[in-house]
Length: 103
Length: 453
Image (cartoon, rainbow over all chains, first blue to last red; front, side):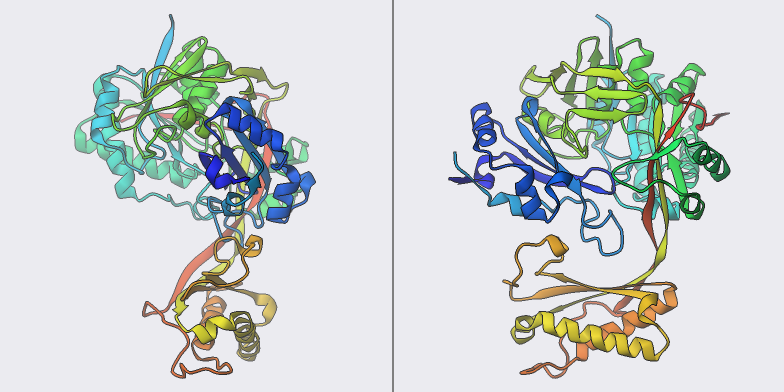
């Protein structure tokens, strides 16, 4: 087992427009990227569990050209709305860092 | 082989860039220089209040260097989403800075201003005609929401920029524009295909952000028929396949399907190949024209007035019973505010707790405080600034003085770093419109005016 923080070269979050949050995990080794994908750990259900959203609201896109996996789902509060904690959405990645991947 | 060289100076006008990088870029004989003027990312305030999120001092510094370079070399300078949010006040402010600099520097040129804040009656007419549709799971737009909005901008595509270039403008300032639009305009107008033209814009919109180390700096993109090349102008930075791949994921919901005015950029079969150790070639992108041309609408409305206060505790006994303490403070505030005439429905009190869940809120999986101190931002949003200030005052007092079992710090619970402790923040806006508008002509709601500066 290895944690995402030990496997990925980039793990980040950001707004995708004012209503959605997008999270990217990027690798720099094709074999490792394929192993992580094949592990079946990074799924809509994983983001649903970590971020308290419905799995059907998670758009999960593996992007082979970039050796990246992207997940986009609704923000908790629209950017800058009452109760928002992170206007840019750029500090929402941490729960992913310790996810274990059997590679 | 046909090519066009495009030089972007920074991520946003006013973020700054090294003068030497601009010089290095100009030595490559770019056909156009430009920079993105804004973003929706800093939130709804700037669109609502009609102000920029970079200082005019910082904007003017960047503008001066770019104007000197462009006019000196006889090439166009293009800025999209001027003034941060691309409304009329943002565009007018940027235009005035350009006129001031031109007068100070003795520069002369033809300037085009492209407006992106359509008259509200015009938008109402189009809404009634069924030509506005929701995005991102938003509800259908109502006439009331449209009428109530503080400001609404439409996000133009490349066509208005192309028209301004055709009409001989050398400095083109636009209101809200799709970030890649000015760059796509330059490349498409040079008879290059839309796919690499749009992809070039996606790289250029953030300056040297697609390089490492990341920094606000200049990026040169060379667009050709079959792809494009990215190279940062500062020798300390490098574009690598990983840095380009990373940027291809930036702020989009899908990395493979990018919806733009007039079509969709499909990047699923892109290749990122290192040309040198600091330049990358990108190829394999495709463009699918849309059957209906659409532009995005962004609008905000007033949500009240905000006051805040910042404080922190270093008391382990208080930290140990924090949730109970905060609940008690809330109860006291409710009672005392009601007593002076602020009903609970006239305000929202939020006690942001840094060291617990200040960053992730309800999505924070860690539910215990591990640190020795905890910071708070006490925030009240109310119907008026007066109510916000009054409720904040009573909340601040009770954060400071509310008793708790076992309390040893009997003079006060909170360290306040400032006097005054309470800060009136002013109007609060929220995004209320995030929709698309169908257009018959991509230029029909983006009027262009020309002036000789």
